[in-house]
Length: 25
Image (cartoon, rainbow, N blue to C red; front, side):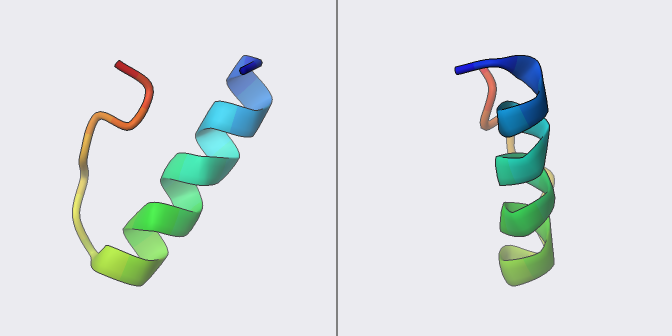
């Protein structure tokens, strides 16, 4: 997964769950 896609996933996850998880780890 490239960094742009990763950041996009994190942004969407934070929007949905309101949590700052380390999705990229």
